[in-house]
Length: 73
Image (tube, rainbow, N blue to C red; front, side, top):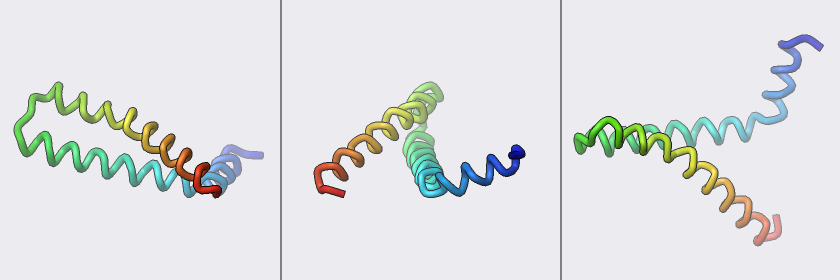
């Protein structure tokens, strides 16, 4: 199997999750940029808020998984 076939298979298998990841990342960066650049926050605070998106992402995905498990899906 060639590299292209491997990539195509991977994307076909995980396309929903990859789309969710991209939408979350774009939304997080947009909100953080609007908030922190609009208020004139220091650059280090802006970068810290962007980095906090990693923690926010895993927290959101984990809580979503628990909600799905408790609802019986």
